[in-house]
Image (cartoon, rainbow over all chains, first blue to last red; front, side, top):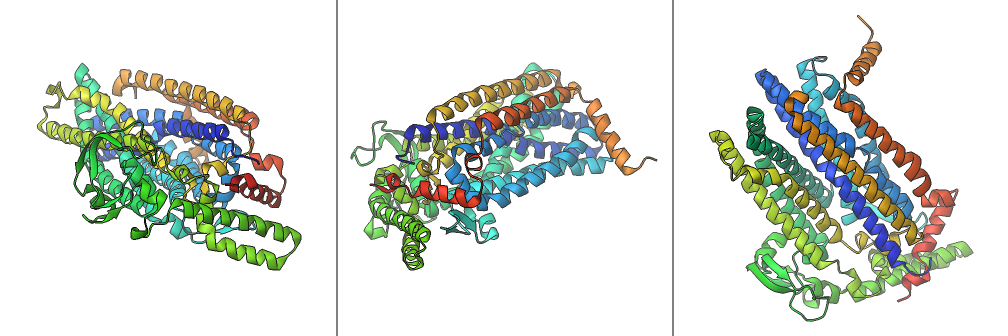
Length: 510
Length: 75
């Protein structure tokens, strides 16, 4: 293959990021709005009040629009795996096959049956069966996301597998270990709970707009009341699962934690930067202060990352240079061992081809000694193992600030909703209108933390993105990047137009 | 009383017929799927390994060559 083509790697990454981010505009709304529709319909079935039925059908129509425009946009990511990331795709095929197949089967049966009942079945099936179908759509959509997130969790924390040098694949050894990996579970629970918040903000935005305009007031107030309760529960759950994610990062992806906390020098009783402006000129090893300005909570990071006030949290420098006192092996040592692993793997391949079983056995044994460092062997220098710190830091902090805002917003909407004075709070309603756009920003920022923060790895410590790409011309990837940008923008505009039309019509048009 | 298959068929048929905004959405879905599978997948996103090699053994050999290439381990 020759030298790693950085233009190819970067365009492939940009294309994947673009596709994933556009895909993620649709997904969180599907995950959260499906449950909100189920709540609304449950109230309708319990009370028998037709107003709740109109309300449910309205939100269900918006759910349907979002689902229809967003459906299958994720398949493009699979196209990209096969074309742009063929080394990676081949190597993980055995791990991802089962989860993605289950996801496909679940999604197909769900969409063919319960979606149809949900949209076509009003007044044609019993109330109970219709409600059951709506709940199945909600549960099924979220379970469908589980399998994708299990696959993503495995990339962040490859477990339950062994590398087979004969098939050149990571092969699954224990399905349950992959499924119940703490990283996968935290990823699923945090992603779904934050998606619920996105959907709650969607309901707030449209309902607040109606209240400002004085239209569909009763429907808006009812929607807000249910959404604010769901939002508050989701907010606390998102906080707990976010804490669990950070705890996992501290254990298995300490570089990611150091990056999104802007921590260069590790320490015992490490402070948590609550607010800070990073030094834009800071580079790894230049001795400059990473922050121009910071407000820190003493020992906060040790508590969040290690659940102990005085625990040691390694910074970027500890991980790159090593820290003998804390038993941390530096990247220079890992790179050497990684290169040795690749050399031994190559020797194993040559010995096998030559039919020299004894030499193959020796090479394989040496490879096994260093296999856990294989990915580091592709890095040129220790600093290559550091993700973009500023992007990770700002994305993480924007996500957290917005999440706190959503918590307060849910509380305010719940209190004023219960007091039945929400439509009089003219200062609050505009915040509700913009909350959905802020929720989208927070949700995208969360994925930037998760994915940019784990660079340069396609598979944590095993395969960097530079070794995962196909041997393609960068120009081809660049061309398809712009095609996707155009296609997805058209889809997004179509969604916005149809959605706005439907919102304009209100519940009568559902 | 019609049989279950007939009732299910009618359920879907009537559902599709009575759609309003859904008709536009189905058009978008079909157009999108056509662009994705008949244009993008076919002309721009062929599976790199499947189109170049006919057996899994050849694909494994190729990936092995790629990940053990000297330039990737030269520093």
